[in-house]
Length: 169
Ligand SMILES: CC(C)(COP(=O)(O)OP(=O)(O)OC[C@H]1O[C@@H](n2cnc3c(N)ncnc32)[C@H](O)[C@@H]1OP(=O)(O)O)[C@@H](O)C(=O)NCCC(=O)NCCS
Image 1 (tube, rainbow, N blue to C red):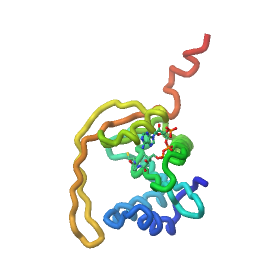
Image 2 (image 1 turned 180 degrees about the horizontal axis):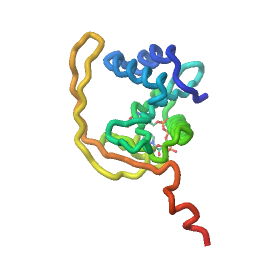
Image 3 (image 1 turned 90 degrees about the vertical axis):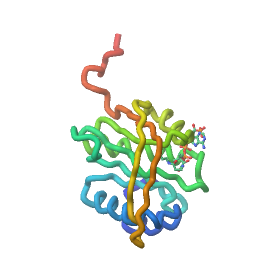
């Protein structure tokens, strides 16, 4: 069952995916979810939130209000390769369209071939590459820096104006 995340999911997701270090980020994202600025969906399997994804509705790198940015997409190891990730991403795309988004973007590590394959199958195309540097604090106040070579991927969720019907005879 795919559904919006609840406060109870926060603790369980942290435990299931070993995300203690990212607690402050997850709490911030949950606040944004409650404020309607981010869509946080989970796939519940056997009563547990075993897959999770965020769709940022107001991503920092995009000001037009058209785009949803896909972040923090993870499926628990115990249920991978069963289509759960694809179903969750598809549900997020539909939720983004309902919220008026016509495009989706995401960043994926250049060495993460599994995720790239899933995104390609879902209709995302690589449009750019970038070097990302991300700084955050864990709950104990220790700072961490993550750096990553990434691809930028993009998908039209709704056909662009002018292309609708363009393939009709
Ligand atoms: C990437 C991830 C979300 C995929 O979730 P999933 O539920 O296993 O994905 P699906 O079962 O829907 O897979 C759909 C397709 O993606 C591709 N794919 C998924 N995992 C793959 C793997 N390990 N190797 C190669 N292709 C893979 C396949 O084409 C697959 O279709 P198939 O199983 O019919 O061959 C999951 O592996 C994960 O959580 N990884 C760690 C976190 C992560 O990398 N997140 C993405 C950050 S950008």
